[in-house]
Amino acid sequence: MIFTTFALANPNINKNPQGHFGAFLEDLPMEKILIIGAAGQLGSELTRSLAYQFGGEQVIATDLRDSARFEFDYCRFEVLDAMNKEALHDLVKEENVTQIYHLAAVLSATGERNPKFAWHLNMESLLFVLELAKELKLDKIYWPSSIAVFGPNTPKINTPQYCVKEPNTVYGISKQAGERWCEYYFQKYNVDVRSLRYPGLIGYKSLPGGGTTDYAVDIYHKALAGEKFTCFLRADSYLPMMYMPDAIKATLDLMNATRESVKIRSSYNLSGMSFSPKEIFESIKKHIPGFEIEFKPDFRQAIADSWPNSIDDSCASKDWGWKPDYDLDAMTVDILKNLPSYFKF
Ligand code: SER
Image (tube, rainbow, N blue to C red; front, side):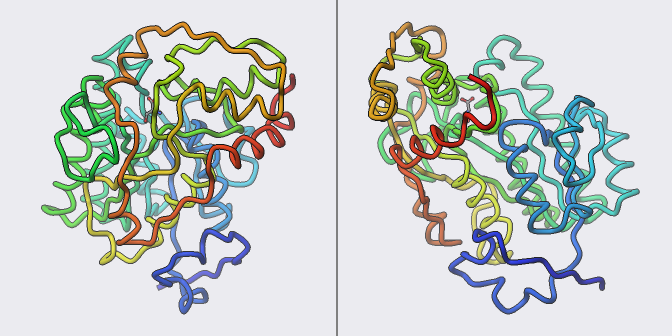
């Protein structure tokens, strides 16, 4: 077997309370990581962390757009359409890929504009990846799920891991079905697939990507641009959210956890913080006192209303030691400090 060593400079890598890394830093098996949809909101930050962990030459970022290549000067890049089964198969085989992070998906608000396309892309591409993992006996697969698996009949406060779901967006339906497929491939074919139900993800390195929770990304852009923010949700619309560094930490911790400690093979509940548009506005106003907001709820309000207010993630804490670092005010300070170096205002 070939082995590699990686530097420990990423604090997330050695933080896992299960301590699986401590003893084996010198002896990690050589992994080759493929990321599908690497230029998206999560991908653009996760890919960098993976390159940090495994080395840029071991990481292949892929995306539909060739123009995304310039974002990945620290690792390899290939153009790949997640729906092109043959191209995916050839790339994985030729490059001896051992792990796939399948991040390409149509999000909730965009999905409602073209439900059949969202279903087709979200489901088919996942099934290609799971089949490939089975056929080529890949080491690990990562696939993100979402709070969108929950629906109006789900308990809203501290939503448990196991409860009624009944999602009513096509995005949520595809994520719920995807979770069942993941567990199925684990149980029937021993595919080591791992997944997290992300809350709304908030980062400053990419623009909003068509999600209902993306108002909480856009609001920082408007505040820094000195513009009034028009919010498409009501002032009191509570949603579970997470700052991107926490999402990256959770993903790496789950993927670095021992196989035995990953007890849930559908997808883990994951919680960071919960807030309303009014609360994030007030958090920003502490730093930009002249900032203004108006509320004009649109079709996305019904989506938000169907999702939980807060999430119980005790299974993730118990199984692989999950704990978030950021609350709303800490996130606001960090974003207002760093966003201007990524976008011009
Ligand atoms: N952020 C996603 C969305 O709003 C939910 O996972 O679509």
